[in-house]
Image (cartoon, rainbow, N blue to C red; front, side):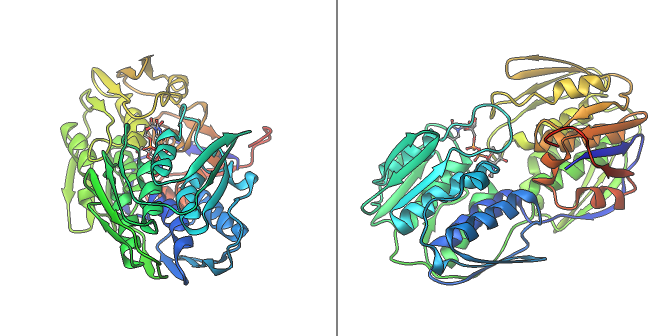
Length: 423
Ligand code: UD1
């Protein structure tokens, strides 16, 4: 809750250790309910979205113990396939309970989920896939009501490469009878992490990380120990922040391969990026960066979640940058906030045209979604003067210890409570 105060004209310097991937753990937690025994999840980030998913599991009847490094989840007590409305509304990823609940209990009833306001985020591909596996699904009064007499493997072609739909169908198919193929599947590293967990539990999932995933159904799944992969979006945020503030930062505990599109774009801008086995050193340059063209795409393309942080960097680039958002329809709400800081940006449909200015200045701004919040921190660090970012709660949903991590790199970010309603 509250406001972030960010002191401007700060160069980031030092080392930062990356937490476990939010988007992996958000799918891993629902998967644990399909096991017959206890699963231990290590390296889960301590962030609001993850806590809510843990609370949902507990509300369903699982025994959930949270500690500093993750969770112990014993799903044996789960009897209730309807996660509470108030919790589901807080996290979009709560839709990922649909597949596991259906396959384990033959029934699921979930409110249409909440999450970031970045445009319409339909669930039609999730529903299409689960329907193909033999679920009857109705949407009534804002709830998704699904039931089945037993899921049966089927071929499924996704019309849209959706991360969530791929995960939901992949999880549901693990306990279905027979073989499921998901074509045009999403290839994000987080999907591989979930598939690795499922396989360790005894599932038979092949091809995760490619666009065809084959799942042979098994009778049961067992509890296991699983360590979540590093968060490539958190890592990318710090890489862009290091470059944007002309600093020098070593980003530790990463899988550099997951960051290739970000490394390539930063190098294109003249940023020095040195890649180690599990670390990346980013050294910004003194001269203004050149304008760039950027297109967001499904993995291995440039991630939509780093579009707004990269836009922050480009606000002071020399020339005109063209940013095309191909994943979400309405992911330019941060633009008006950058404009308050003196940036010159025009949005037409899914394209933002950024005309670089010499310097941006601190202002009162609002985090419109999680990643936009992180982007405003970067802009605040670049700007002349102080930036007050309202809506800090959006940022807490996805970044672990964000102020402490930035401040350990020499930033001066403090928090204060807000007196605005709802903040
Ligand atoms: C996941 C990530 C999110 C990231 C996004 C895209 C998690 C918890 N969140 O979100 O951080 O920004 O991938 O990389 O992993 N779509 C449909 N119908 C569907 C499903 C999706 O039309 O049934 C559309 C969406 O509106 C969007 C696009 O497909 O335009 C991609 O969405 P999707 O990959 O499903 O994103 P999420 O899984 O919600």
